[in-house]
Image 1: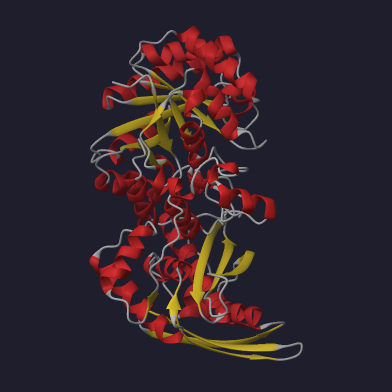
Image 2: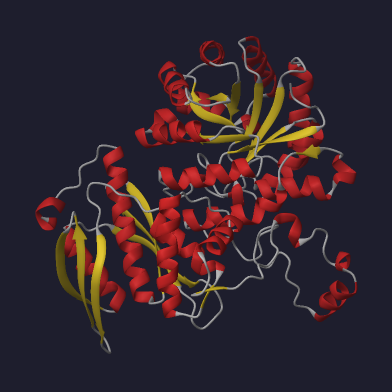
Amino acid sequence: MFEANRIYFFDTTLRDGEQAAGVNLNVSEKLQIAKQLEKMRVDVIEAGFPASSQGDFNCVQAVSREIKRSTVAGLARTKEGDIRAAAQALALAENPRLHVFLATSPIHMEYKLQMTPEEVLAEAKAGVSLARSLMSEVEFSAEDASRSDLEFLIKIFKVAVESGATIINIPDTVGYALPDEFYKLCKAIIEGVGAPESVIYSVHTHDDLGLATANSLAAVRAGVRQVEGTINGMGERGGNAAIEEVAMAIKTRSDFFALNINLDTQRLYPVSRLVSRLSGVTVPPNKAVVGANAFAHEAGVHQHGVLAKRETYEIMRAEDVGCTPAVMVLGKHSGRHAFRDRLELLGYNLDDLQLTKAFEIFKKLCDEKKEATDGDIEAIVADEIFSVKPEYHYELKDYTVHVGAGLSTAAIVLTRNGVELKDAATGKGPVEAAYLAIKRIIGLCPKLDSFRIRATSERANAMGEAFVILSHSGIKAQGHGASTDVIKASIRAYVNAVNRLYSTAAVRDIKFTGEVAAAS
């Protein structure tokens, strides 16, 4: 039974969040995020869209197997095949939920569905009824609700409730709504549907106009009790409502909302960092709640005020979101237990084999530099531990670069299945030369959509982290590499992205042409 004075959080980082351009998380990475979401006491974790790909099916199945306290949801259209695939993927879940959706706006019904309103109502009834016959907890979403006719929305939500839906979701799919308008829409739906008290109303907002958090809070004021969003607001186009923003707004302004949340907000910052590292999507420094500058004060008058009394310029404490600076310095004399504790503080939960491998790499790093920062440790985990192993898995064995005034040369040695593969190329710079050499080795020419590099800390001996996005045959894959040598980090990021391209292609049963002869 739902508590009327509590807000439930439905996290869709692993589904809608992963739909952000260039993001491609593997099962191991998704499990890490899911485990930390569960530790943070997220109520519902939407693990994927099982019918969309074998990879999504495997992820939902894996998360269902590992997560015991949070509800695990799988997304499905109202089509029978989708619903049965989601139910199958959720079979091992302790607390499963089938989340079915169907578009309801005139533009979607006419141009996407090519169905009449009457046909959409019948489809909703059939889909929800089937879902409820397979699972006791069913959520129904009216896609593009904010651009739908109110009378039709009330009608279809009534049909969904009568067919067994236990959660009614009102999505602002394209981020079109304004807060006052969305408040009125949600309130009218709740009053018009008149569902039993056991049915909870939910919202799913997007940030195309920068209003996702504001719209979610407006819906809460209207009586909605489940908020859907993602960590860091990651997602399609402008992204989703940021879980951390909605949670801290309700907690900080408890005088206004007078509602409870069950989230452990002290895990917000570590989970934000984890998602950023594994997805490759950087959190802007001025990002609310979890940005690097969220609790920084540079102006003299602000610093004076904070020193006199923190509340002069801080409406919440850094400690409230888990942003307390770590005081323990890790270096070459640090032990395995201290290293593991720091990893857990940063939001990582490694098994014994992963911990052993990460600790060995950490020790090697400490031979190169005196101390390892949190950024260094996170880079090690993201780069070394959560890498994919497809059939065509390449590893960097060695490289040499020569930099000239206008021309650079790179010689690269990769291994695949224990076999050394080597080639060389020239380019305008060492990174371009290295990437051209790798293309010659693998016999594949993916397009480089994005390349960026950053330091893991502000220290002179910081590690360099490189992020690339490659695309080929309709597949996009991000790659990550870290090293004290930025050229090596750049090469590792490219190789990591190549491996992800092959892994995704294998899941989608796409065959790249030309690579076998070149790589054999």
